[in-house]
Image 1 (tube, one colour):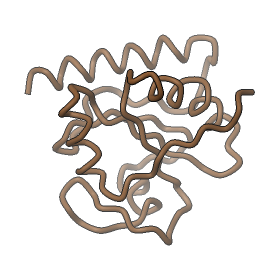
Image 2: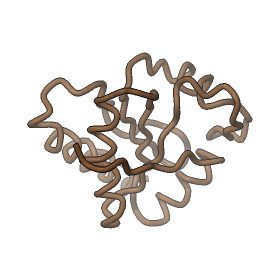
Image 3: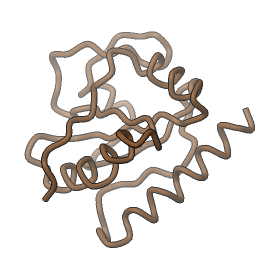
Length: 136
């Protein structure tokens, strides 16, 4: 497996989504859990390398983090764990694609059903999300 590559946890989802939209990109949010092997696979093999190359804007939200403050899309303050619960993101990793208003722009990627095809699934969702973002 690739060396661990962290994704940032944003202080503000709204701020992160606005910054992503300014680049013409959706905000990609991955729910994660310490020790989740599939989370590491998605983060290290797909999201972190693509982010380093400037191909997407990605952040992570730890489903067990009840200590940190996180500003939601509406400006409300919550925790990463409570936000994941509000999204009904019950499995890790769940990868979601958001516009600046907090609406999801593409179908979620839940888990890693077929690792060999994950890149294609991710690219298809990104293409869909980018298309919807441009129409706004």
